[in-house]
Amino acid sequence: MNLKQKEKGIKNNNYWNWNGFKIYWTVQGEENTYPIIFLHGFGATSKHWRKNVNYFVKRNYATYSMDLIGFGNSAQPGIKEIEQLDNGVWCNQVKDFIKQVIRPKNPMKVILIGNSLGALVSLTCAVSIRNEIAAVVASPLPCQIRKNSKKIVVNTFLNNLKNKFIKIFFIFLPFKLILFLINKLSIIELGLKAAYFKKDNINYELIDMVRKPVLRNTAARSLRAMCIGMSTRGNNLKASYLLRKLSISKKVPFLLIWGDKDNFTPLFLGKKIANVHRWVKLKIISNSGHCLHDEDPSIFNKISYEWIKDLKTF
Image (cartoon, rainbow, N blue to C red; front, side):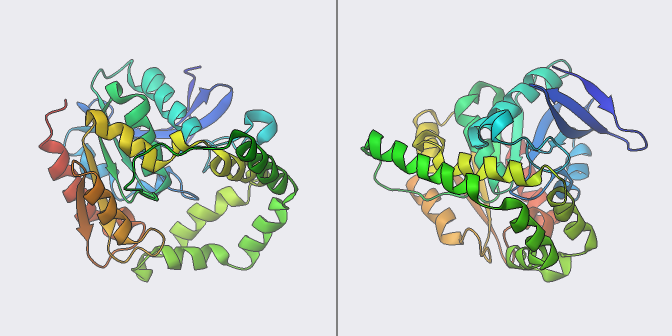
């Protein structure tokens, strides 16, 4: 379960066997005091944090990053192997990673820094395994926040029927063809241009990082499992519910960092979260988009570090 293999020719690149699935991860400064796990966004990989990890290593942080299952160099299981992929599954991956990989070397609580989907996974962990988490930096957090905290009455029959239709729809959707067209029609480049406000940051290295996992034979089946999982997950795995749960204890400090030019998750959502949940800290980076840790790494790193070092949760 805690198998670790060094990949030849590449320093600090490892594979971990999680429930029979091969998970790719890296570490730098493993001997340092405070552990951080960096969690990437949808379609990205652990390499997306290449401009951030060294900053924290130099400041006594043990920096871990991994490819969430279904992404990057990690296993890409389909519905036959894993049924579905959602932030609950990715949270379990993080939980076991802390227990099996970090804990044998470091007893300190873990800081989670996540971009978009990685931010949602970080929030899920802050609720599910809050005793293991020192703090969360979410940049940004995909969320449809509701001011009304009353329980939503769900018709179980209709909800199950809806989920069955969703599952059937995605089972028959031709994902292989879709991914083929995404690659051939340069849709990856168009998506990055929509995500990034600073277009000069979009280079071959970034495009290749996103494209390579898409070209794998197992990508289509894993995307199907993600679409089913994220579309049919319960309200208890949605950000609005998770924030309400976390607000009861306020046990895990929570920082939002938002780009004011974010086209995917507009800034008004971040302001709404901070307004409803006053214990959440919001920092805004001007002229930055959805991937602000990669667009403005020096600003992002400084904001994150200054906030983390002032915490009293260690």
